[in-house]
Image 1 (tube, one colour):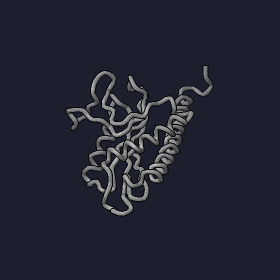
Image 2 (tube, helix red, strand yellow):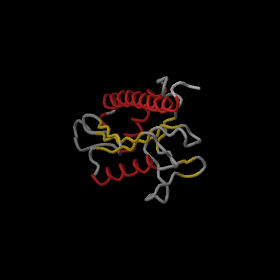
Image 3 (cartoon, one colour):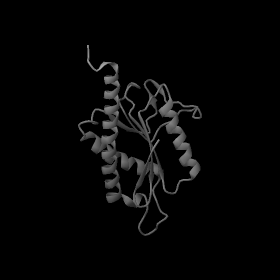
Image 4 (cartoon, helix red, strand yellow):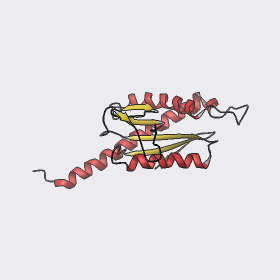
Length: 169
């Protein structure tokens, strides 16, 4: 019998979750730095300040950088990073309010089951309306509180002109 009892397992879960988040944050920061160093013109053109690419283009580019850092992270490399992933095992992801299905901008998970849904990310640009930002927050909250999906973490990223803002939900 383990001398720590049941409480020890709970502590391990907390430590694992904290370590996961710590490693995710490291990768997010590196990916954000690279995005703004290499591809800042997607977010805000230096000559025409109101010119920007579509949110999906920015999110895709950010996702490519993020995936690079996840794959090189010994703690995270066993997970898959997917963009606009609408699958729920053999069905389509559905939430109340999204009857035709929904697809998060980015997710960190293991494909094929809902037991390793780690992170759901929704992205918005600095030009997005408050309503659009709030809709994404609601979607994240529904994924976090869903008994079916059970994501550990939810994150909203706002791509601002000079850097990204991370809002943990």
